[in-house]
Image (cartoon, rainbow, N blue to C red; front, side, top):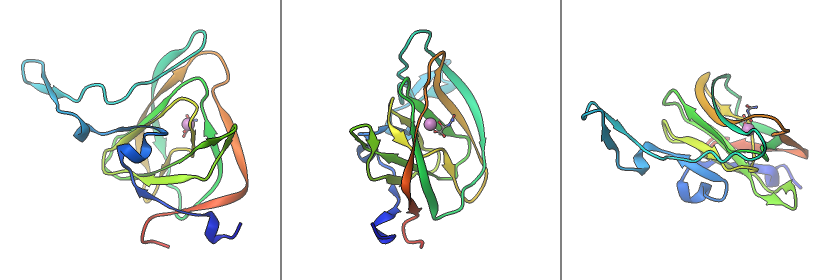
Length: 170
Ligand SMILES: NC(=O)N[C@@H](O)C(=O)O
Ligand code: NI
């Protein structure tokens, strides 16, 4: 396959386009609910974290991620068979999200998205995805995923890498 055929151009992240792979976490998608006597408002139930297996727990962590150079060389994707995984950015910078359909246990052609400011994502359980990919600047995230016993990571290394580009940039 030619280099051009292995070129993926990221598209703006939308709930509909991401639906086969998980959920877009976006406060703009719901009407906020007042709470604490009106002193706060809650954007409720933005995503669910499915976890499976004996002793499975939902855990919250913090990530300090370094930026990747673009175009991204995508040589590996991974998935988590025992649980969903959500990343919520703690800054307004967009980040790159790469997912692949599953084709008989192997990842198919990657699809790439660029988040809108403060949008997060929740990969559905067992969804092929690239690792967390900020660009331009370091970015901190909240991560919510599965804790507990069992192997919750499957990796796939592509025989040939893909290159992931931002729209309009080479
Ligand atoms: N390993 C880890 O916590 N992060 C990856 O799963 C990822 O999707 O970035
Ligand atoms: Ni992951």
